[in-house]
Image (cartoon, rainbow, N blue to C red):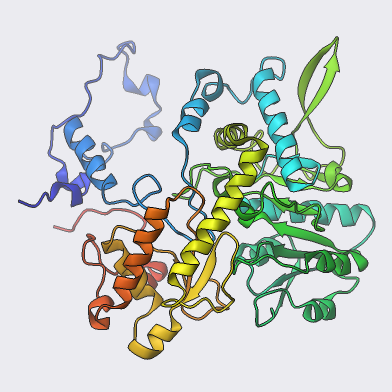
Length: 489
């Protein structure tokens, strides 16, 4: 018999008088309620909360969890988002009492262990980036972009320059223009070459004394390394501009090459994409930024410094001299930063390089398995991800990227990113990461091949094994239902 309990709301399971907890008798002195709570602040009716037993609550949420896909339960080749496995060892370390229980308002004197950890993380992130000054504050990659652009703006103002434009290629992550607009810049989108690279002539034609920053993802969103990046950086620097490297794709190059060495002046990290912080549900997030030394004074504070006093190292939080101010409370999301620190300490320098090499190897292996059924317009080689196109299938048989993505759910695989980047028609952006085995990649490729051989009309109605098949995405976006309301009687 089908279990319907998992699909009911807690409100629908509710029965008057049921309880999941028994509270002790009140120890508040027996006084009139008005003496304790002013009458105008008293509720006239009890809150509308579900009345359920503890087993009902547990079963409800455990049953719901079995309907989710995650990196712990399924292969999750979500291109660009880089759904890396989160090592449980680091989860346990981040939950140690001396870490998880440390109050953010504790003094530097009584937080030396945590400050040493954060200082060491700053040093490691600076070394991987090739950029010496680091702020751990930003809450996510997009806020890291925004923060770095505020730093750039402050630096130009300090020099007496008023620069108005931020440039980016048309394959950029959507957060690039959004961050630039929020930071007060005019956004200028550049056409890429047919091969998907930055067009040097197009870039050159838009560079002038109003250019503040050129934002570029390297490897780019098509999964290819920008081979002309030193030349790109040089021509931007020649007009006095700065180069921002979107670090979303660092999982392909960490430990191999450094943004600071190929011309970047600023960058952010996505800790979940590169250093295995948990990812999903809108957070938690961390997006540290690294910048050149001449931008260090403008970083948001506090940053961690190290001095030697009386023969021992002392760590302090400090505010950079010309800081743009806080962009996040305290030092940022400490819980995620600790996980990133643990990951780097676990891998070591050789392990970081091996991480990137294996990510590139897995992506190229999967590309080779699929390119005859899902062609890759930009070539037969990639970095950590590749963008295939279902357009030939759609033109010939009416099978879309969405059809394939939906049907994959029935095979037990999360779908790749679809319809991004926009420069590839019927795009399917696939990123296996470094931790997946050859057997998993073989099974995924076999599933894709089986799907594209199925009847198109059958695929149009997939998935078949999920509680909801195809929600109306447009309606959901235009008319979101953000709260539960009881059914009218």
